[in-house]
Amino acid sequence: MATPSEKLAVSLEALHHLQERGIVAIRSADLTRTHRERLSKNGFLEEVIKGWYIAANPDLPNSESTTWYASFWQFCAAYLRQLKGTDWCLSPEQSLSLHAENWTVPKQLLVRAARARNNITALPYGTSLLDTKSTLPEESDIAQINGLRIFSLPAALVACTPRYFEQNPTDIRAALSIVRDASEVLEPLLKGGNSTIAGRLAGAFRNIGRGRIADNIVSTMRSAGYDVRENDLFQSKAPVTFSTHEISPYANRIRLMWQEMREPVIERFPAAPGLPKETKAYLKHVEDVYVTDAYHSLSIEGYRVSPYLIEKVRDGAWNPDSNRDDTEQRNAMAARGYWQAYQQVRKSILKVLNHDSPGEVAYDDHSIWYREMFAPGVVAGILKPYDLAGYRNARVYIRASKHTPPGAEAVRDAMPVLFELLQSETEACVRVVLGHFIFVYIHPYMDGNGRMGRFLMNVMLASGGYPWTIIPVEKRNSYMSALEDASVNQNIVPFTDFLAWLVSDGLE
Image (cartoon, rainbow, N blue to C red; front, top):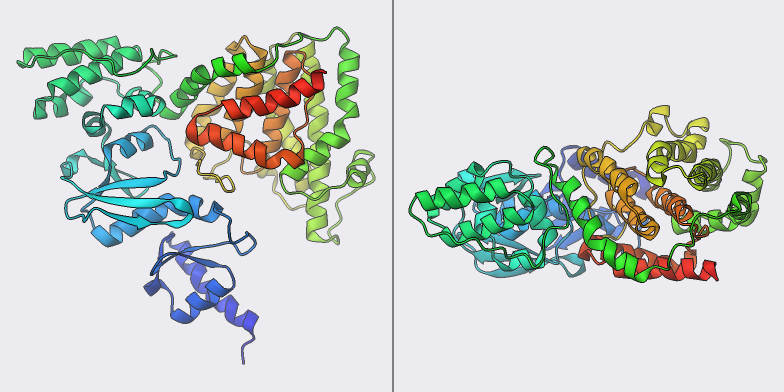
């Protein structure tokens, strides 16, 4: 007779087969009742709504939202496809956000369908799906991204409400920046005789520096007999002018966020002391705080490390040992990697103190920090050498966050822009706050992003003469909450205030 663990293994194998087929939204019919009950009881299956499930991680607490946020978009796509076939698409406003590569999980997902009943479907962790009865665009005006039926970019720009310009200026500017020629939007404008909308879009394109597109929209509509009056609905001028050669919405989102966030940072952050005259004394302080910094930085990431272990690693008294407990070895390798990376960061700080460009130093050296951080895993045979090759090649999710970092291809568009902005930024405090925030917003690696972001922050702190600053593990919730507010709500103030408070304490 099979033991409970053997029975669970059979159920896990059934779940694995579904996952191999790419199934995220699991229907009751996909698994037998016995498998469902067994997997649910052991924490491997989580019910979303009656008859629908997602795979779960039993190691996470029951109140943990990570699994749901990571599954949200794929679940909704599968659920809507099963429920409605092709009689649905997301709202034009939500479509524009996705075109702009904003994959933040919304509080309520707005869905249009010809045969909808205006129902709200409650989903986990305060999210929901609103099904509204509305005429769908023609099939030629529907695009598909990751299984989601959305308005094509031109159709969404024509159909979105005026309020969207006020409420989501970053998203709509990033979406507008993808349009290369007026012909892309003129067809839906002319088909519908949309003179008011044409004036709105002309004003929007002129706002982001695409005057030629704006002129072509107005002149073409007028030549067709429409009275077009250009109208800019944005409440301010675009903080950046977009290149006509670069159409990556993610790269443009980062430029927009940087320019929109820098003023609040400058207003709230303490003034930079300037590069220290005593370089040796500054580096001595960086060395002296290592044990404390390593303890707090690694603890924030969930590693259980003690000052004793950190000192042991620093003194070279630890070596990889395959006979160690897995958890102990993981913690020890993290500590060793942190020590090795820390030494490289100190070298980067020395370059900055010697007046090298902080943005260029970070661009040149950040891959070295990363390789040293995970090199012990390669030595121990847990990681392969190619794991240190560079930026990630797969999707990644942030624990308990509604923010979904960009896909692997978008990372390669976004990271050069981050370092370009760091190189051109004149204010050290902006490099400190936005350097850290944008780095973890992009999340370029599969692991280690938080530690890398804090290393980057401290190199940028050195560029202004601020002291090395430790984020205490006791303030982890405040730290993560402030990053979440910046990522999801584009509100950089809490994160600025949090870092300013820590830095000010070190300046006293």
